[in-house]
Length: 472
Ligand code: URP
Ligand code: ZN
Ligand code: ZN
Image (tube, rainbow, N blue to C red; front, top):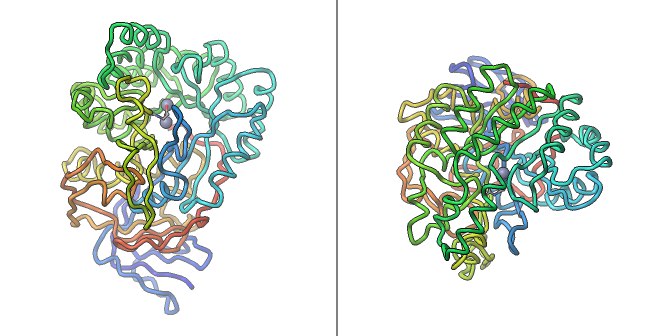
């Protein structure tokens, strides 16, 4: 059965115009135009609202093992929360847990396949590099994985040395793959953490105090330099600092193929939030910084110096000893309480996959910092282009998947843990008054969110084999 969405205004990354959208029974957009005639189609009234391409979140961690526990949203619960917030595609990160990269990919498929409720894909973390891995990296493209993540922090766990980074960049460059960088200075962090613990500093704020912001700046500049020398493209994930934004701009102005992503919490919160009694709620890496950093990151977003807004969704319970009700079941998963008395044991990560669009609409569009088109570009179209899914995703075009959000720019909500649908016991935006919210969300033409009703299903999401992406 085809579907005709009418009485709405389309917002794309570049245009805003009134039109109907016709969706064919295969779940693709078949036509866009005024007063489309489709007598046999089911008619959906957008009620004068906006019609946006579904959000694309290029950075999530569902069911990620960490510090003896696991991030509390899996590929079903996290996807459901994403959909309620208007996101219809998410890209997760595969752990390099086995010698063969293919085995790592298969393990992540096993974890996600039956649960996925929106469309999804994977990036591959490279935390051990050797000849065998070097040979296997290009083969990932056959699996639809065209992106790698590397780390300059988490010494002894995830970090790799500069010579491995350079070799990976060269392989990625040769094969038109994109390398994602977690940019902090691992050696400085290791030294400062040892000293802080020896001096008896155990509270949450020390997580930020032991990870100086210049570490992001030096890592971005250093690896951007290597990427330039390797003729490779680079994408800096979860950018949290002014100096990082400056280094991104510096590198781009000099012709390095570097792009950047920030996440909403870095635009609003600071180390002062980590000084509160519930400061562990804000612990993630890299950490919250200062108001000056918030402002510089906003500037980078407004000016288009930053290409995407993602979430780095990696939630943990604040108090994992107390169950919450989730779909009628009592669920408790060990979380931030594991680090009471030692900030280094607090699982790193924040909820956010459902928050991204509603928070960025209110704080970005309603407050006049970005246009609706910039909003669509940064939360949907740019990630789809950079990560090789455009125009199947991130677009309202004939032939695109009908991943569509009917957005009500007038709907006011008091946001928080209840509305967010994340499987955790807190939300960083608790009590915020938001204006603008999804009314209906379609995944490949199927209505999966209708107001407050969940119509999606486990296993309803499809793995997207990605192509080579674009450098924006
Ligand atoms: O604290 C975070 N961000 N946890 C997830 C892992 C990462 O580095 O992105
Ligand atoms: Zn990271
Ligand atoms: Zn992450």
